[in-house]
Image (tube, rainbow, N blue to C red; front, side, top):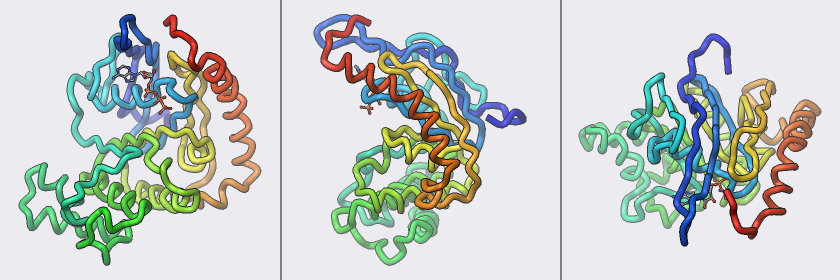
Length: 272
Ligand SMILES: Nc1ncnc2c1ncn2[C@@H]1O[C@H](COP(=O)(O)OP(=O)(O)OP(=O)(O)O)[C@@H](O)[C@H]1O
C-alpha cells in the first residue's frame, strides 16, 4: 500500500465462524489483517473453499466478523457501507429489463429520476462498448456482453470500492482476457479500490498492484506480493514478459503448498 495513503479498507484480526450443518462450528477465516489503499487493485488468491468470498463478505458488510473488525474509510463496518460495488461470477441482470434499464436501475434506486438515470446509464453502456445494444434483453447477449452490462451496472454507481468475486471465471479464455483489459481500462479512469478474488494466478498478477495469498482452510493471509509491472498494461502481452514470470514463480511458490494441503485434506472431517 502506498505509505502516504490511509487505508480505505481494513480488516483487523478478522475471524469468521459458521455453524456447520449437523452441528459444530467451521472457522472459515482466522485472524485476517488486510489493508487496501484508495485506488489500489488487490487480488486475493487461495485454494478452493479456503475463505476468499467470506473475506469479501466482511468488507461488504453483508456479514459481521465473529472476532476482530472491519473498517471502511476508518469507520467500523456495521452495515453495508456507501459506495461499494459488487461483481460476482453470476450475472445480476434482470431478464425482463433491457440493457439500458438494467444499468439505469442503480441510479434509479439511489433516487435519480427515470430520465436522469437513463442519461447516466447510456453513458456507461457506451463506455463498455454496448451502445448499439441498449434495447437488447440479457438473453439476447453473449456471456462477454453480459459481463460488460455487469461492469456498467457496477461503475454507473461510481463506487469507491469494487468487490469482485471471480467475475470472469465462467468466460472462455479469449473473452476473459478481453474483459480483463476492459476492466483495467475502466478502472484506470476511476479512483476505485478493487478487491478481486480469483483462482487464476495469471489473472491476479496481470490485473493487480498487489497479490494476497491465503492459506488453506481456515484461511489467513500467508504472504503478499507487490506487482510492479508498469501501467497501462496489456493483459495478453504482459504475461509474456520475464518480470511477469518472475512474479508468477514467487507467488506460485507460496500458493502451491496451500493448494496441496487443501487437496490432501479435501473430504476429510473438519476438526476446526
Ligand atoms: N453462510 C455460510 N454458512 C456456513 N458455511 C459457510 C457460509 N459461507 C461460507 N461457508 C463455509 O466457509 C468456507 C469458506 O467459504 P468461501 O466461500 O469463503 O471460500 P472461497 O475461498 O471463496 O471458495 P471458492 O474458492 O470455492 O470460491 C467453506 O467451507 C464454506 O462452506
